[in-house]
Amino acid sequence: MLLTITTTARPATDLGRLLRKHPDRVQPFEQSFGTAWVLYPEATEERCTAALMLEVDTARLARAHSRASADASLKQYVNDRPYAASSLLAVALGKVFSTARTGLSAERPELAAAAMPLEIAIPAVPCKGGPELVRDLFGPLGWQVEAEAVPLPGFDTDSRHVRVRLTGEVRLSDALSHLYVLLPVLDDAKHYWVDIGEVDKLVRSGSDWLAGHPRRGLITRRYLAHRKAYERAAHARLAELAEASESEEATPVEEEAPEEGERALPLHRIRIAAVLDAVRATGACSVLDLGCGSGKLLAELLKEPKFTRVTGVDVSSRALDMAERSLKLDRMPERRAQRLQLLQGSVVYRDKRFAGYDAAVLMEVIEHLDPGRLPAMERVVFGGARPRTVVVTTPNAEYNARYGMEAHQVRHADHRFEWDRARFGEWAAAVAARYGYRVRFEGVGATDPEAGTPTQMGVFDRD
Image (tube, rainbow, N blue to C red; front, side):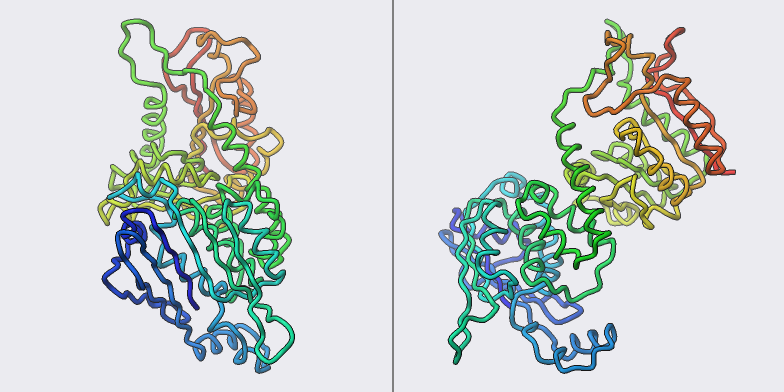
C-alpha cells in the first residue's frame, strides 16, 4: 500500500519537521499486520514528498482473520488487502504520524498551525461508490479532487478501485485527520473489531469538520461498521461538540471583580484550591476530572506526586488540544506524563474508562447540561463510575446580583441553568440518597451575608 504527501511550500523540507521524520533516512515502523516505511523520494527546498508505504504480512493477517472468524473460505487469502489502501493503511498512518495529527510542534508551532500547499496521491483504494463518492467526501473539506476508476486489465469494465489525487491549501494535521477517517469509509471493510472506542476516535479526529459534512451519515455509518447504537452515540457527541463550540464564542460575566484596591485571588484560582483541598482530604490517589477544559485543575493535581493517576475528560477535542498545550505534554518529564491521561468522552454516556477512580470532579460542569440530561449524568458518574468521592461545584445564582446582573441572567451564555443554594441542596441530597452517598456543602469565594458565596460546592462520599 502506498500514500504520498507532497508540498511546494518553501522550504519544502519543513514537511519532515512536521511529520517528525527526517528526509535523509528510511524509517521502518512495525505494525501488528506488517511493516510501515516512511521515505522521501524527493526532498529539496522547492519540493518535498513523503511516502508512507505499508508492507503487509499476508500470512499474519490471514491467521488473525482465522482466529476472529469461523469463515473457512479462501477469501481471507485471496483479496486486495495487501495492495490497496484500506483501514490497514489508516491505522498505520495514525500511529506513524500521531504527533503530526495533533497539530502541535514544539519547534515550529506557527508552521503546524498554518495551511500549506499539499498534494496527496493514493494509487489504489477500494471504494464502494466509485470516483463520485471520493469527490463527495473530500470536496467539502476544501480539496480539489481527481478520482478515476482503475481499469481492470483484460475486461471491458473498470475495477472497484479508484486512483485518487487531492490538492489544496490545508493544515497538515487536518489532512492527516481527513485521511485517517475517510480511508476506511471508502473501503467500508474494517480489518479489526469495532467497539465503543471507535466512537471516540471518530469524534476526536473529525471534531472540526464532521458535524457539518453533507455526508456525515454515511461517514459515521461506515466508519462504525454499521453499528446503529454507535452511530447514535457519535451523532449525539457531535451535536454536543457543536454546542460547546458555540459557547466558546460567548462572553461570560466577569466573576473576578474584587473591589477597588482589593488584591484578591481570581475566583477560578480559589475554586481550584477548594477542590484540591476537598480531594486531598479524602486520601485519593487517582482522580478523574470530568469536563477538564484547558487543564487548569490537571496541572495542579500533577504537581503533587501523591496523585498517581490523573485523567482529564472533555467532550471537546479543541479543549483537549488546549490542555495538551497548556500542560506542555510534549515536553513533560516522562514520570509525570505517565501519571496523566486525556480522554475524549461525555458525562452523559456510560463509559467503562470512568470506573476505578478514588475521586471524580465535576468543576463548573453540571450547569452546562440541559436539566433533562442530569439524570443521565447521575447514572454515569454516581451509578456507573461510582468513585469513592465526587466533588461538584456550580455557580450560586443568589450571588449574581453582586455582579450587577438581572434576576433572569446567567453568568455564561452556555449555562442551561444556575441554582440557588436551596435548589442545589435539594438536588444533591436526592442524588446522594439514590446512589448511596453522603453529601456535605461548602462555599467557595468571598461570603456575602445575604447572598452567600459566588460558587457552591458539594462533596459526595460513598457510604
